[in-house]
Length: 148
Length: 136
Image (cartoon, rainbow over all chains, first blue to last red; front, side, top):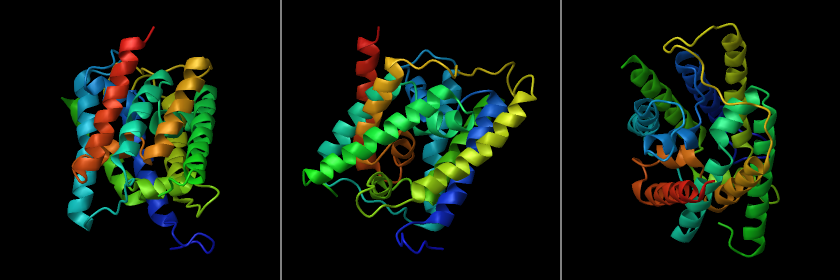
């Protein structure tokens, strides 16, 4: 399925993948009583956070993320991906993402998927802020000739 | 043990969803953020699908006294809006825009695309370590 105005978009795969992500987050919420926030669980898994979930729970969720992608690739073949042309983008992006998600207590999964669906004022503000700053960042990089 | 299995199952489903939806492709994510260019709305469908399921889950959660495999819910507050939240989120967006990766897809890519994803995730953990060191 394609969209007339956006031939590159994958709306059906996106929607089904999104439903899977929602079910995964629902399993964490209704099964373990916790938010499926990847930045927080990642920090917890390597001992950078003292916040709630037992470390084994955080580590197993993180291991599951890696396993899920691996199983998908095993079943359906290589996952299409194009990375930034320079590792500088990955290093700078990673550093800022790590610091920012800890300071702001969440990322696309915790504030985005879990918080917005809860109508959390806090998460709605967080999402509007990071969507705004990310779009601005991409626009500035493109303007400066660094688009990819 | 039961908690660990539930967490693994949730993570695996999450990772599979990221893979299917194209969110493990930094250029596709960047396409969503590039509103002035060849905009790619796929990410909005992903968010829509995930949020839809979770909205139902929150309704169910309100009727539960405790989760299935724990003694109580451990959920963050929803009202506090301070400079930590806004400044931290603004920073995260800059990182997301630069790399085209956020924490979930970055980690999910570790086995299938180890070198670039590993560089991103190692840098992300370095950023988290710096935060922990300077946190007040």
